[in-house]
Image (cartoon, rainbow, N blue to C red; front, side, top):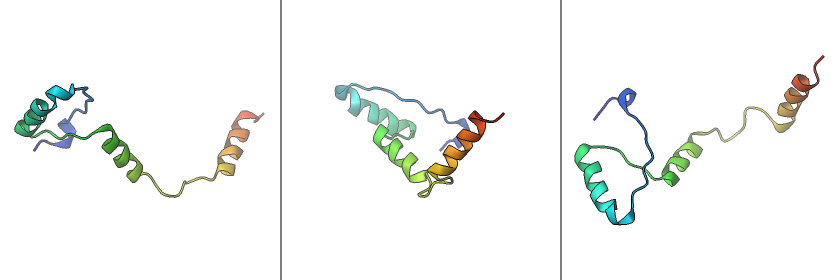
Amino acid sequence: MTNSATIQGVYVNVPTVDWSLFRELIRKFGWQVETREQMLDRFISSRSASPMLSESEVMDEVRAVRYAK
């Protein structure tokens, strides 16, 4: 397996008829594959369940910056 610092992420559209060939290449080279849905699920699960700021705190910051004199 390669070092994560040397991995380049790409998004490739593969025709359905070529998917089995592409999966075979992925397996032979030891690459990792995930769908857009899997990437989105991974991103969502990595996010905090509770926001660090409330909506009113965000608006207070916006007003302070926008209307500061």
